[in-house]
Image (cartoon, rainbow, N blue to C red; front, side, top):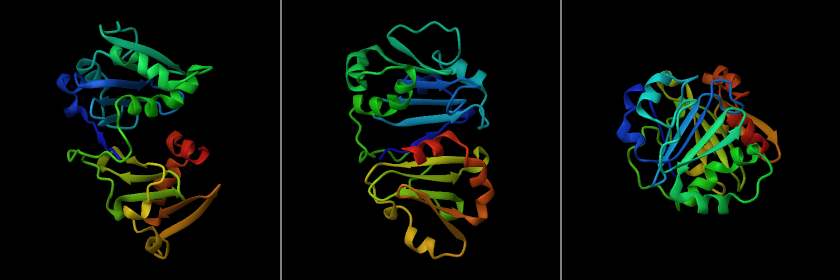
Length: 231
C-alpha cells in the first residue's frame, strides 16, 4: 500500500510537479473535498495538500505548477477532464487510451470523479501491496496518541484519521482486504478506556480516541469519511 506525502509551501517546487503523471485539484467551493490538490508520480507515489484546510498558499502552488488554476492553457502533452462541480483532472497524453479503457463507460462527470484515482493507479501499474518508498513523513502505523479514529470493515477497506501538526487531521487509507490489526492493535484499543467503540452499520466499525473526540466530531461531515461509510 502506497503512502501519502503531505505538501507544504516549502515543498512547492517546479521540479516536483514536473514528475507528475496525474494531477487533480478542486476549487474553493467544489463538491467533495474542496481545496484538494493531488499529484501522482510514475511510481505511484501520491503528494497531496489542501489549500482550504492546510496552511498552503494557492499562489505558491500556481507558481510551481502550470496545471493549477482556472483559465490557464493546457500544457502540451497533457489531457484535461472536467469532473464536474469544480473538480479538475489532468494526466499525460501517453496514458489517454489506457486510462479511458480502464475507466469504462460513464454517464456523467461525477462517475469519473469517483473512479479517477483507482483508474490512475491501475494505469501506472501500482498495486495496493506496493510500498517501496521510505520518504513519506506520515507512516501507515501512526502513533496511537496522535490517532483520532480508526475505521474498518471485516475483509473490506479501512480508514484512519491522524493528527499531523498544524495541518490538522489527515487520512490514512487501508486497501480492501488489509488486516488493520497489522497496523493498529484494534482489539486491545477497544478494551482501553481511552477509546470509544461505535457500530456504524453494514459491518463497519469505528473506534474514537476520547482525547481527540472533538476533532472526530468536526471530521464527521468530511466527504472522505462519508464516502467510506457509504461504500
